[in-house]
Image 1 (cartoon, helix red, strand yellow):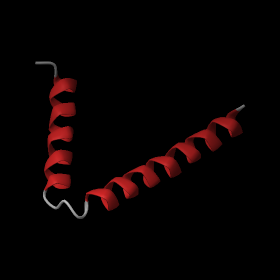
Image 2 (cartoon, rainbow, N blue to C red; image 1 turned 180 degrees about the vertical axis):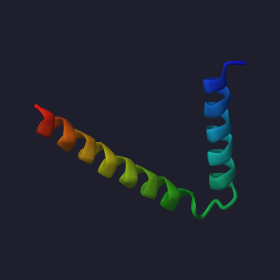
Image 3 (cartoon, one colour; image 1 turned 45 degrees about the vertical axis):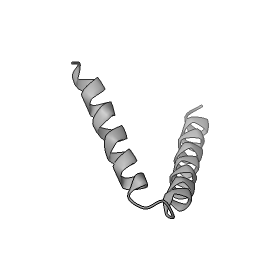
Length: 52
């Protein structure tokens, strides 16, 4: 098994475990994750625009 694949499966497994541990927190956890991703991608876009 390639190393990168095992890392991806480990991460997805831990994410599944952490989200399924409490059903009530699932939407909030998803919202927080999406929000964090949006903020990160916004910063990345800003950095790329500054590099142009």
